[in-house]
Image (cartoon, rainbow, N blue to C red; front, side, top):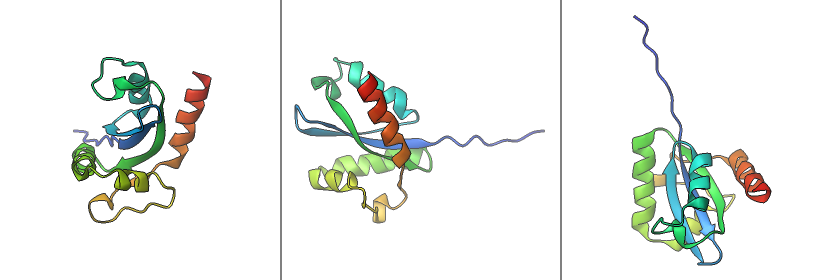
Length: 117
């Protein structure tokens, strides 16, 4: 019998809208598709309020339960300061955010998609 393990990466991403001056924290297994959904969905209660979302940063986490736990932690803080710190290039997570790994090469992909779209 063959046993195999499929490793699925999950991501936490932070979006920012200048027009409403708000941040959005979300998670997805496929942030490329999710970002496009945010830009095209006008019925969403939160991200549907703006069309100028920009990706500020993206992190990977070990698995789905870990990424959900971290996303909930960030949202429960209700801290714009924390979110803005997480968007800085030199941010290093500690305690509850220690397992996050910044994914810098994906940010360039989102920016190029945004400019070409």
